[in-house]
Amino acid sequence: SLQSKDRGRGDREGGTEQKNDGQNFEEEPNRTPSGKKTQPSPAEKMLVEEKAKLEEQIKEITDKYKRALADTENLRQRSQKLVEEAKLYGIQSFCKDLLDIADVLEKATESVPKEELKNDNLHLKNLYEGLVMTEGQMQKVFKKHGLFKLNPVGTKFDPYEHEALFHAPMEGKEPGTVSLVSKVGYKLHGRTLRPALVGVVKEV
Image 1 (spheres, rainbow, N blue to C red):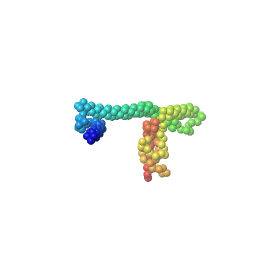
Image 2: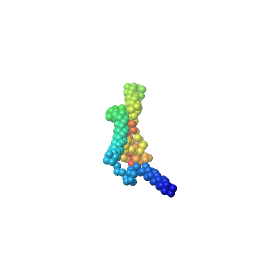
Image 3: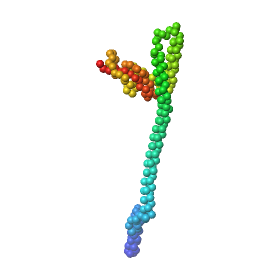
Image 4: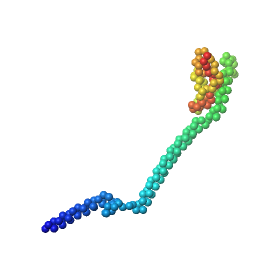
């Protein structure tokens, strides 16, 4: 009958509305069936706040950990450098004392007149040869430990390796070069241990 058809149509429309209401409720879980949004509970708020605090603490601890790692690595590198320098330059003061002995030996050999070194003067000749051998052996020991002589005649004056005693013009010599070495210098592993005492050519 007509009433039955109307009733059936109404049931179907009602079912469709209920189905749509069900889909909307699933899409927005914070809404109640009446359509109003639900407010988070105090426990949920507390959990959110605690989560934010913990994330901030984790970030701070991570930053501190990274800085501590960097500081530790820098300290390790500095300590390693100090140990290496101590190995290289720990004998520096000892070497300086030996340089005085090397200077004496060099002066002794230079002071012997070459014309006196004859076979008829064997004592002087043997003494001279002994001094030369001793000086040569000492220079070998120096080189073994990284100590090298600086005798810069004819080279450019270097304030890091030379100490100028005087400046004087000299024909045929380039200004700024070393014309005379009064006392040889020494370098220990590339570092100037004692500068060479020199005279420097200046412009006329």
